[in-house]
Amino acid sequence: MIETTQQLERKAVITISTTGNLVIDQLAEAFKPYDISLPQFNVLRILRGQKGKPASLQCVQDKMLHKMSNTTRLVDKLIAKGYVCREVCSHNRRKIEITLTQGGLEFINSLDRVLDQTEHELTKNYTQQELETLIHLLQKMNT
Image 1 (cartoon, helix red, strand yellow):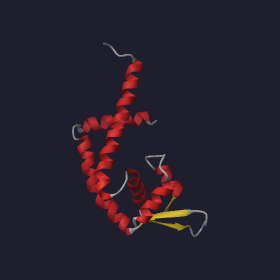
Image 2 (tube, one colour):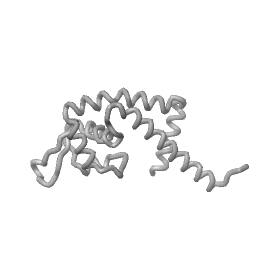
Image 3 (cartoon, helix red, strand yellow):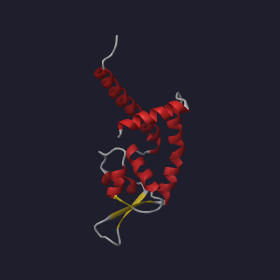
Image 4 (cartoon, one colour):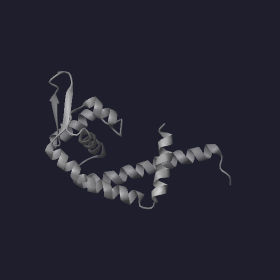
């Protein structure tokens, strides 16, 4: 049976969606023992990428993988855990600056191994060429 273009498009979108859910579920499961959610982990990675420079809430929100996340609530939870701190900008009192604490940096660095192992487990059946092709094809959807 030959599938129509519409059937293939639907199949592709469903497959991408279910695969995305699988990846999210596997990452969430890997981080569960460390009492950190994927959106919280994402905030910590964004702040680590700032290399010590403070980030505004808007900057963090713009870089989030999950755009639906409530950044203020995520930051509040990370403050409670001692991983980030929030301060009023000295130059603009309306702006809030968020930075990674030393404990937060050590924590996110310790999770790199967990992330590496989980990513390897998710992609172990692909060759390097297949991974490059997969990345290329998925990036085409984002343009």
